[in-house]
Image 1 (cartoon, rainbow, N blue to C red):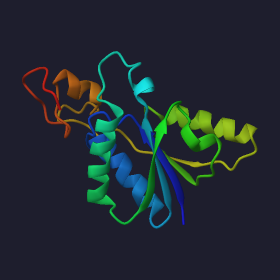
Image 2 (image 1 turned 90 degrees about the vertical axis):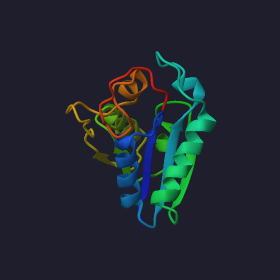
Image 3 (image 1 turned 135 degrees about the horizontal axis):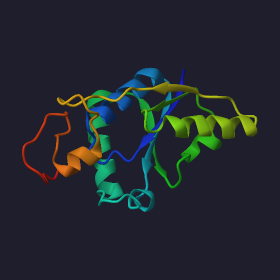
Image 4 (image 1 turned 30 degrees about the vertical axis):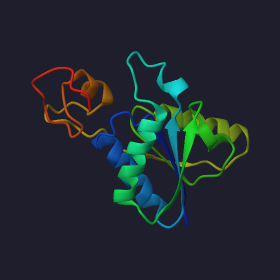
Length: 158
């Protein structure tokens, strides 16, 4: 039974996030999964407004119920980039290309603490219709929707 960790702000819960979560739940199978959800304090350091932690958690729970109703998981509030990864054993960490360097740093810190290395599972970007990565930034700007379909107006609130 695998122990898996994944984390993010999950601002718009777009198809890239969904793929990240699907892969993490697939690896966890009947094992254990921790989902780190960025705290308001960390999220509000971004250059744009981010929905409140409670709103993001509610959206995340709604999606998880659709894909993994029977899996054992815990949502953990992330107050720093590492969450529980420096204190708890995991077999896998699932990351995007954007967070891959953080996973490398985590494994380096784990090595220094004589902890088991996690296997880093990197999910490639999911591309929008214009062949550019789907991102919360692009969604908030109104360029694309959560599935990567191009929008022709700006400022839609998703």
